[in-house]
Image (tube, rainbow, N blue to C red):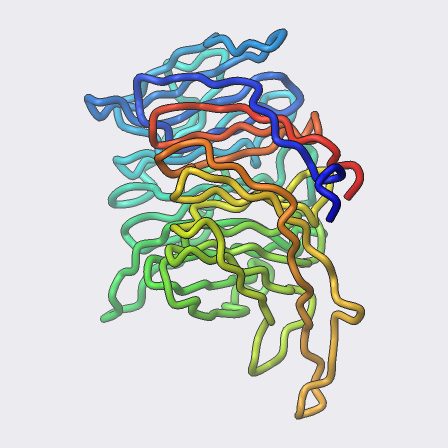
Length: 356
């Protein structure tokens, strides 16, 4: 690629914090974002920052009883924009950011830390009822309807099985009122895809190292691609359109960051562009290129998926500590917010994405 045509990565905001941030999320349809984490005294930090004329100001400063590990707006109505969080005590809570002191919903979701959370059915995106999925250190994955207090589904280790730490969860395949799936990644490398319509395990595999992040390129379409990041400095892109009855879904594997790849996020305006955040304090921007044909007949004459390839568009190392979280703005193309374990928040503008 001609470097003059490559996307440019420009730092817009650099903010120091007094706590360790674990997650960041843009507030939908706004110029604000939420930062969540843990204070030195183990209480939780839940802060809202507002972007204005090139600066970033703290406008809401909330504190919770326990450190916050993760959050999502995915199950909230767009006009409400309530954030659901998972904390170090195993609690699922939902907050109205305008009245942040008391949660509007709270439930003991897991026996210990809620490592991951995702929402679906809110923000006028996709189909079906609003739901939240949580994954915990106790090895359980639980599905919640925020209108009721008990989980509507629990995926738990079987009797006699070792409880593997669930590190990441995500929704996908929500292309109708009936269809939806959840995928979970575990510390031993297991990836499990559960079909919520048929209540069956649709697919499971092992990627050899702990799964640090999972995301479908879109939640509200028939499954297309899925990004998986791991401790071993690699990410994988699975082609999710064709499932072979024995081989499952095909994937490509790519080495990145020379350290743990902590997270993957697809650009909301273009599902074939994605960014990864690494343990080396860097982030990489990629473009996925589809193959000429996405399906071939295997030896048994059964269709099997074909993966394409990825192109590194640009990269930047911004810290000596891992990038633990990143989120794209769904409103302004190329605007992203990142959280680093050096106790900083940074906003970047990625230009020229409309050329890809």
